[in-house]
Image (cartoon, rainbow, N blue to C red; front, side, top):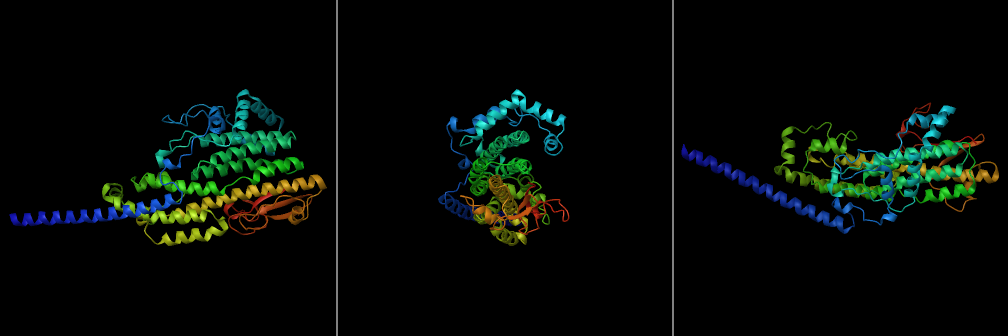
Length: 461
């Protein structure tokens, strides 16, 4: 009996030693492969840790964040940095909507009261000054990786709403040049946000662009724009670059994910990182035992294997990000298809990655289309100011310009332009890459949503 126990213990010890040897072999092997890939990434000039993503310090007199903080008043070292007061008024979106669509005397009075409030006036002056500075570097703790907090983004959105309202109010007083100038302030603030190379920063920046550009879509409908005002605004718009910040943001996302070394639970990763945007494993549930093994030391080789699968996927996605969405869409789909039949528990980090980044790339190009449409509209407005009518075609407009018209990022060709009575309709095909005839979201007869609709700019005269 005793010899049986000895044999059993020996077998168990042998199995433990064998399993430990296998664990050690794969742990070392995968780590060496990861180190080699990280060295390759570094050699290409990309960051591989969150700390390396931190922007370089800039002099205070060049740093817009110093001025923004006078308005935002955020303590980045506090447990809840987003708490606390600021100089930004609480703007009711219904007030802006009413001023755009059904401006009564009472609405006008409320807007005037809001914009002449001393704190609001002070905030607007500071925001304008900040927008003119070349850099914006906030005291963010970049070393925290995926746990990073960006409480200033909510403040930026609120500030963007205030600037948008100020532009609309100026336009209603027929000060079109001033209104366009406030649009520049808002778009420059958006550029400052995009300079923080994270994917959330790019999405916030794109949302800010939309908040600002909706105002000139309204007030330029019937307004005349002098060639001088049009030229100044167009010159600024043509310099906005959404491509480089987007690519840099993807590289930073990769670095921040690598920094945390994927020691968190897959469920936590799913809920905190992906949220409801991408369902990481809808048909492949990971049970509690697998999760427990994954995020303990026993699962380290598995995590490292996932990193090795994740890195080439991200390499390809970063490469695709340099292309327009219309060209890269097939590449994103191919990446997604290649991973579709693999159980999510085997490619945890990569599952859904291409789909998420394709959606972000489509949003980027939508924002580029909005900016491009804005530029063309300014050219058309200047043309009418000097000649009394809009041109019959964009070719006619080109003959009068000393700058090149932007192309539709979703076609690579000119935007679609059609005269309508005394005005015109100008539009982009949008991310479905189809010409829907200038039908916008929720517009009859198709009632299309954003991803299926054309991106439109109309002027009635």
